[in-house]
Length: 492
Image 1 (cartoon, rainbow, N blue to C red):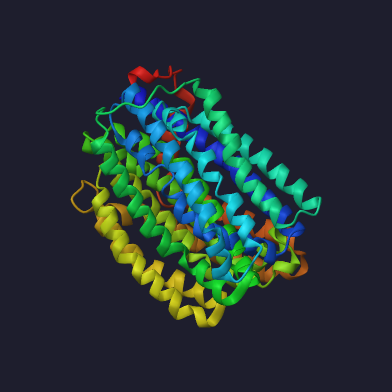
Image 2 (cartoon, rainbow, N blue to C red):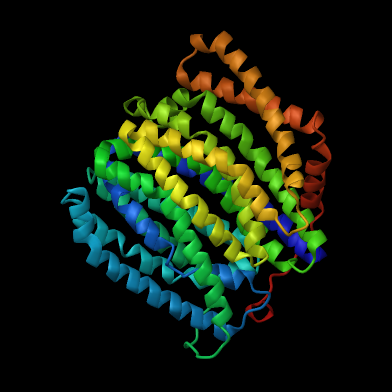
């Protein structure tokens, strides 16, 4: 277990550092591309990705999560899963190409025919590297995964910016979507050095297929519930409205997506290894949960208070109409910060049916809220989306932890400390903004606002809410870690 703790801490540090770089790169790429391209170009690609995003959930049929969750997997199982992934990826590519005329007709937009057909090839590019990535994750080689992800992002973003400067418009965004999985796949192949064997029958995949299938169906339901508004906006309000909403949605989700990816990969792998030790699992989960909330709550406050400045600084003046949408979506950062880590617990314990039931309850409610907000455009949809998510957060916590050693009180206790710290920091930052902000241009003003907010939040969290010992312990673990040899494929 000491070996696992060391790997978890090392992996968590590596992923957090990498996701910090990833966050900065995505923000820079968004800033540059938003200034080179307009809402219509982003909206056109967004129309297609609203459809292909659904298919993306089927790219590995949940088999990567199943392979990670299993205590042991064999060479034959991994090789067979590789070929299953290839078959699924090629099938999704062909299906997307076949659906391209229908997507174009649905939006009444002829340009989407070629865009949809081109984006379909991303499924095959992803499929070739899925099981190689699974091996790196099972071996907890998160530094290698981080380097691959960052390198792929830099190269694909560079190509997209070059394409936008050369006047290729929305095709620059299509190129970025295709080249990033290509570079990632090349990276994981080189990192593992693994060559898959031939597929085998009767290698014990039935339970993994069942687990993966349930994960996929659940992911599909959740995706439809949280993304159907983009289909509706594109269909009834057009590319410009979808472009504004989509960039506000992307900007609001960059921090939570990066944090959940960074901590989630490590947490899921670690929790899966201690699923038979409830006390240790509880300790691991609550520490990781506390860290995510501490890093996310001040971001929520900043997005709510300083939305207009963020839009001006990150996207530019031509996107100012996205400011209200961005502010209305800000509460979803907090909701996802609270809810997403619960999936680590559910998945690591193998409670995928519970997750599926939860998705079946919330998805129809979310779709109904979009229909209510749709007549009022992107602003109405954003408000409805946030309102439903806020109302859902307490029930989802109680349902997720039911029957485990972790209680609703445990979660609320962990969340209360950063929540109180963020509220106090918000008041201080707002007072400073009201007193001095009007004399500063947007970038210096935003820098001052965020600096005051983070300094106040950090001081209160560490010294007034009793969290100092937790972070000192994590810091000491990083300093005292000993070198850990990676496991071979045979040992995992």
